[in-house]
Image (tube, rainbow, N blue to C red; front, side, top):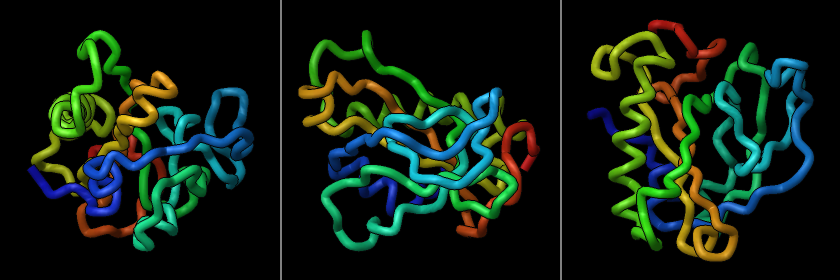
Length: 164
């Protein structure tokens, strides 16, 4: 498999607390983002496009929100799957356990979303995982699968059915 983007993997591997916030970007009736705005990490929807969080390189203790943009704007990432791991684990499985499940589920969701198999694509994926703290205190069980360009080039348009 292609390497995952260091920033997001670091967030997941360190079990960083991801704190959601209210409000967000403007969406149309179909739920698509039509105007840029801050989007809480617990408010992601499949198809949301966003820029890399600025504080990834600062060693921050968490990411509360990202700058979401319409997919027509050049962007770094796109959410391509959300899944709940409730029922897979009776208790906190640890980050390695969550990473194994996230890798499998995101890999399986990749081709149906992009329209091209992972090995042939210019895209790769990363995931955001619940931390032990959000798992235990907020009943957080959601894993977010995120696409990005392996060369870290900006994405143009949605990658849904792009065949890229």
